[in-house]
Length: 286
Picture 1 (tube, helix red, strand yellow):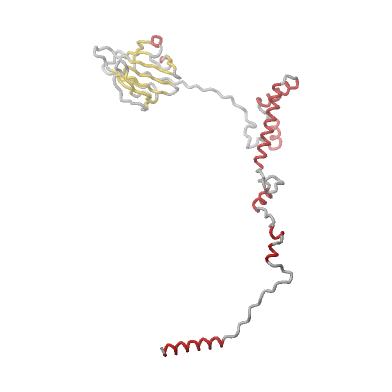
Picture 2 (cartoon, helix red, strand yellow):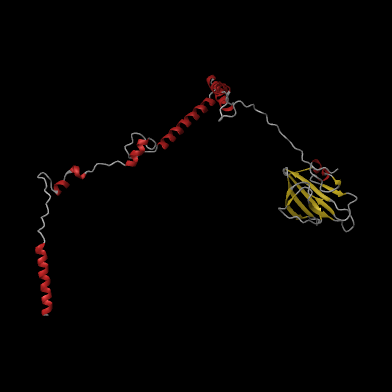
């Protein structure tokens, strides 16, 4: 205990000696208020202190100075964009012009007839660019590049019709004409055809359907070029299916002799714009 008390005493003496060696610090200066300075309560009670001045929006001021956003003279509250005002004015002007033109055409007065003629000519006839063309040629020695129609002679359009002959589906003779059926013809193969007879496509096209006939044969409908649709009927067999593509001369199917050795007949029909036409008009069977 005596040893601890001695250590504690020496520490206290050391601290006192260090404090005695430090110079005395100068007192901090106090802020002196003017005699006319009001107290905080008096300052808060002043009306000009309580009411802060309205600070304008800097972004709004910038847009107004640019002249492209708000109406001139707007104080900053409730301003409307210029687009709305301009749109309303243009709409009103359009309605007034339309009403005036409608009234002119409804009137039966002599002056109204002349006005009607002028409006009709202005809306239906092409503008005469002859004067503008002469002015450009005089000052610029040619037509402007952004209006290439000046100085060009109009060439009338010519209708070009190219004949497109379809090949026959097989070699043979027409046994039943279009006048008998009013929707197709029946073709008998040539005499030298024996056994299986191949039926060919008359033109390029896409297979629309492959179906069974009531008599047991196969009928194939192909959409060809030139808005033509051809039907190949009484077929014995085929390797085509819907959505297949065929070229002119490709095999559509084949026909075989019947059980009584009768010659097979090909039913062939052509439809143009949903109307059956005589196949002899578009296909040469000679």
